[in-house]
Amino acid sequence: MAKILIVDDEVKIREVVREYAIVNGYDVKEAKDGREALEIIEKEDFDVIILDIMMPYLDGFSACRQIKKIKNIPVIMLSARQEEYDKLFGFELGVDDYVVKPFSPKELMARIKVVVDRHLGKENQVMSFNGLVIDVDARNVFIDGDKIALTPKEFELLLFLVKNKNTALSRDVLLDKVWNYNYFGDDRTVDTHVKMLRHNLKGYRNYIVTVRGTGYKFEVQQ
Image (cartoon, rainbow, N blue to C red; front, side, top):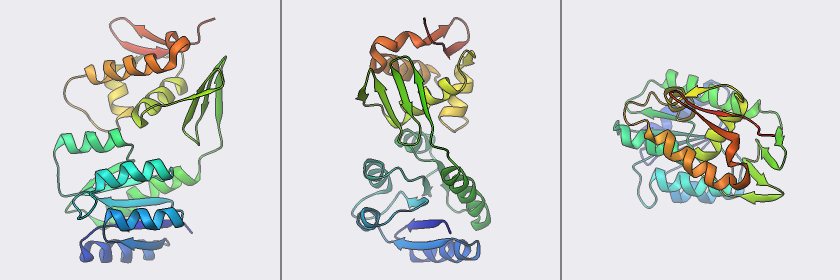
């Protein structure tokens, strides 16, 4: 039975989500704010966290940042805020989905199922390209045996490029697939993240190839 943590300062929201989740066969636990959620997460494991943004003591964005430092648990952000900035910022932090209030409980359950299935169905996978090693489950990257620090979005960008190696990927495709959001705006976001990623890959920076007039591809240089 998959286990869910619902984090929201609104009692009615927690009640609705809990009732639907139980009917759908989930084991449910609740927290009224981000601070309480962190205390629970340190003691227990969950398959997904439903996390509200606007909460006292510790807001959802701050809580998500702390959660990702403790455990690799999928997060679905819940918020009344519809601004594009908030959604993009959430995805930058590594959230798996973003649901805007008011929401359909049935739709939320469908989104939870997708995230939980993906989380539980992952295979332990390690990809190696000469001295560049990617541990997918642990979300770790090693350069010649040394672990390097990547942001959640840098890791996801690298992983998507690697899974589609030798394929030219446009900036629009990268924005859609890596940022998990139909992004309308400046596609220099991709260029900026590629620049940072190349810097972190050090001697393997040339594995990310610029495709003139298109975007980028991952190609192992001999």
